[in-house]
Image 1 (cartoon, rainbow, N blue to C red):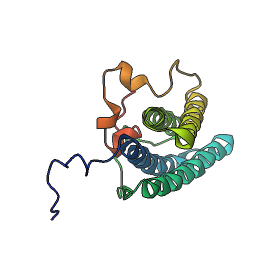
Image 2: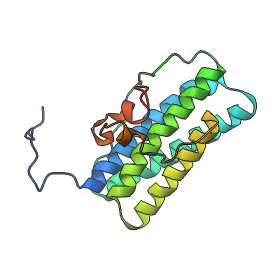
Image 3: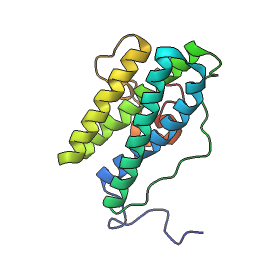
Length: 172
């Protein structure tokens, strides 16, 4: 049992940047899981794209864990499993899941761009761009403002958990 109070004091509260990095890390954990699920349902050229995305998300996850430690935090750990927004039984549903994952990843990176400065902000902007490009490739079209779809719907992406942050709730 923790001795920490329910409400942290001002000095115990995480910085907005650390909170955003933790959210991005949680989302990357969920994306790695999601790509692990969908990867077995896609083959050929799309299979290679899925493997490249999986490797990219693993690399980002590892970099974010280091960033959390650099900011003085303890990295959030991955859940053992994540609820998927729909059954992934074939290639079309796997492709659809990949697009959902990338859309949700773009949302957390948009939050990190807003919260960070300097090199971390530049890295977050690059991750947002990569997620938007992957989402457009998976979906076959793009969106006007990648990473901001949640804001248009009135939801607060910072309030979502790691599963939702990576699209397991099925929201767009």
